[in-house]
Image (cartoon, rainbow, N blue to C red):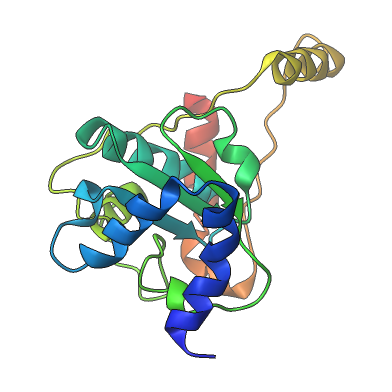
Length: 190
């Protein structure tokens, strides 16, 4: 299937559900190569990374919203719950299973060739053409039931909470493995 048809197949149900999106999405396609991504009327951000990558993406989306308050920001992710109740996001949809080559040009993420000399949030900001720095913090919005669950979990742990760290990952995540001394220093800071 050609890329334009694949895009149409994906976006048609979204536009059909809310016809007012037609104008913004059409402006996205027309202005796609003329303007920096963060200034467009519709910004589509697929993220194929894991939970941590999506949490970092919340910082980038917050900065995009500050610079472009009227934009339609559409996040396509495997982790849509990360963006629940996030006022910076207009629309979230679950990333479909499979590979979609047409999404690659919009994706905010990294590959094994990631420029590891800069922070992941800075790299994601570069992917949407943000020209300056981004606050290194995440933006999540738990609801009352999330807070109750967290309070219950903490009370079950007893007086002294413990810290559980995963210090090694699959072979493809070698660059995320810290030396034990770095984990020890981080634990002391926390």
